[in-house]
Amino acid sequence: MKYAIAVLKGDGIGPEIVAEAQKCLDEVAKRFGHEFAYREALVGGAAIDACGTPLPQETIDTCLACDSVILGAVGGPKWDGLPAEMRPEKGLLGIRKELGLFVNLRPAKLHAPLADACPLKPERIADGLDLVVCRELTGDVYFGAKHRDEDGTGHDDMNYSIAEVERIAHRAFRMARQRQGHVTSVDKANVLETSRVWRETVQRVALEYPDVAVDYLYVDNAAMQLVLNPGQFDVILTGNLFGDILSDEASCITGSIGMLPSASLGETNLGMYEPIHGSAPDIAGKNKANPIATVLSTAMMLRYSFGLAAEADALERAVERVLEKGCRTGDIAKADERVLGCSDMGDAIAAEIQDLS
Ligand code: ATP
Ligand code: MG
Image (cartoon, rainbow, N blue to C red; front, side, top):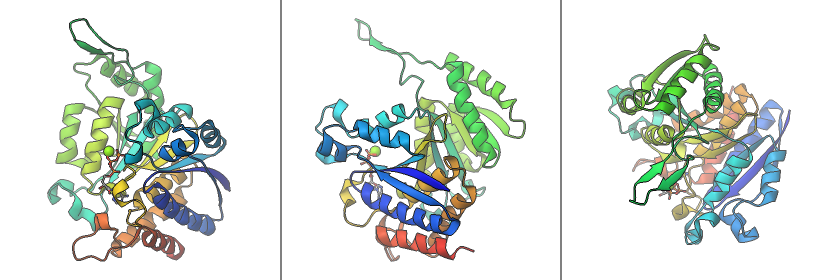
């Protein structure tokens, strides 16, 4: 099959890590007989420099014309002084809005060869750690009306409509079917009305997925369970505010920031895939960045936008293999380990894809 992919390299280490991800994708294409046609476009600081805006219309048009979007990272000290509306990060928010992306997926997975980096005691991760936080992106207290009274009291209106909860719940249950078949819905239904709407709606949607196990946790308990026994989770389904906090908590228990992928999805198959880390200006242009988060993001693209499960598995397995063989970029290397550059890591993963049986 032929797929069109919008490639938004962005700033800092963005171009380096995206190049390695494309290298690996090309190997997958060769092996499985697909064609990936890349269409580059500008976003973030690179777009500000070239066009005076972090998200040119041409970039939006390119994304909409493609089957998926790969994004490197945006931002850097060069653009820090700009007014909020002109910041590189606005480009990302803009793409999410233009593409109608309402769910953010952040998998947190512990790679056995890197288990040392996990800050939890080994007995806490005896059941492993392979979960995905499925966070609603467009509603909740972040987007409700905001105002201040004359006496200085601040207000943020928190709201969730049934339709907003339904669409993300369906996404989460469908995804659970492609994983371990277990959804944990997280809310604060003992005190919040939005959370009662959330829970009732998820309970109703769950009836349509009798093959998926579902349970419900209050967010305070979920935060605690994540560090006590993260192996109990598969898909964590939650709102914008709780998802913001829990996804950061989930990432930090895996160790390295350079290993973590993410996806933003909407109603259609078109999604945006990017590493969770930033543009890392301190190591940009030095061939030091870890490309694995970006490579694993493209594996999510193969799985969730293109429905290519075997291809996604192959890419993920290739990453596991290079880690088992001891390949390390600086961020995941221990003192005595040999350090590979960004492009060497990409080469190693690509070679592994060729060799997979
Ligand atoms: P942002 O605000 O965009 O999230 P940030 O400055 O908060 O940016 P990062 O850009 O993610 O965070 O960088 C945080 C630290 O992690 C830096 O020291 C950076 O070098 C390191 N880092 C981030 N991504 C990688 C990567 N892929 N490989 C190696 N190191 C990385
Ligand atoms: Mg940051």
